[in-house]
Length: 601
Image 1 (cartoon, one colour):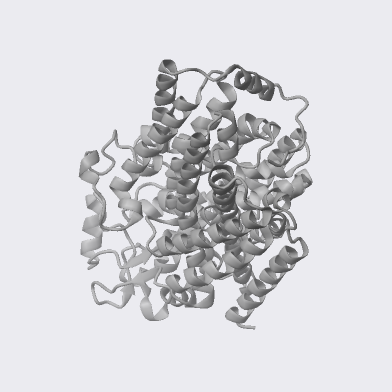
Image 2 (cartoon, one colour):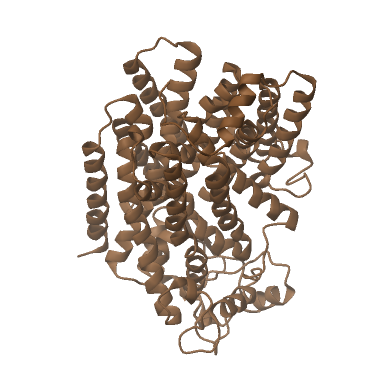
């Protein structure tokens, strides 16, 4: 059976499964629509949280970024897993004890103010929509390759499918669908990694394969990869940092606290019956997440090695110079997978020196020896452009694995992108229908009207995110990092102060959220364009590219969070503190025993 048919079969079967589950678990009440009726087993919830968590950015884009950035890509591993621990330990049990469905509800009640709740909705919508742009980019990449269409058409198809599946099921449908998606997604990530690790190092566990010697040599995979990439003018794989040490630290912190402030994951903890279950499901989720996150560095490194080995025979053959004429791959002999990806526009080749061979190297290197070798070999510049987002999806094809493995990865990539998009849309829909319309503008709205408003706001969010996904501000994981920065600078400090500061009043919290959000968006838009529209950037106003102490816009959330805390405490000093009953409420939340059941409104 040919690859395309196998792919259609695998993807079709997985979609039939998800839609079947969504139909079986249709939501009947608003409580079921938002939090699955509050009765989900911790292991089930752990799996669903893991699927929600491991978005297109984790599945499709993270290993690609690690493969591009080398050691510097570790900020994603440390930030996203570290943030999860922070969320599970510091925030989840307290929010669960408070018994409110959404972050804006918690902020509105704790800071006794509808204005605070409305500001939280604005912050939440900004972060969630930025996050969905990243997911839509991932959906576009996945659909374009497996349907053989351009990535733009892929995004349109993805929009339609996400809409059907989030709007009809609500949270109950999504919880059980996500368990199925997690299983598809993790198999799709691990099976090719086992195969490739076995092929390259003789060790089937990729975590061990990463540190093992290549088959038939006494050279380790990482040592060989370092040698190959530096020979081609790229920076050393195992030591390259993401900018300065300060930037790397801020980047990691921004991802960590952004994780803890991200609404769609926090809502998960309201779907379990007791507070103890909230901790247990966080523990299980961490186990399920670690399976993917400990494999990603190996996937990134092995994909990089195989990719270079495909276009340059000198990578596999120690006797052959990488600059020898016969080392570069003849374009006419390029493997089928390259032709398939060329159709999507995410892999491009341009014959700059007219020799019909593919030269892949860093033509902007400062290493004069590399430049001299390239010139002596008649190379006129790098000829191959590979989008970082395709690395994981192309990985089994590059390693020439069987068709069923390639088809499985297709199904996994789509599962990853769609599961998070659905969870985020639910956060957006509950923020608009529940926190804005019901709590602020129209308290008398019927339950039916509230559900309808939620579905309309989901549809609006899909259209907006799809439109912005056509011209994204960066690779999927980079765009998602921006969303984490926005959540880190606006929501995280407000939630932390709400739980751990008895005296923090509403004026301080509101001023802090607005200041954090404004500062971060100003810096991000300066680099990426107003509302991510290309050509509207104003980078000179912030002192040039990364003008603030060399900090990249993706890492700026940490600065925003510091501003948020500082402004909140300063304003709180000069305004009245929280009233006595709120201070008593905060005391009672912090004592972990005896939390009541999750309440409605």
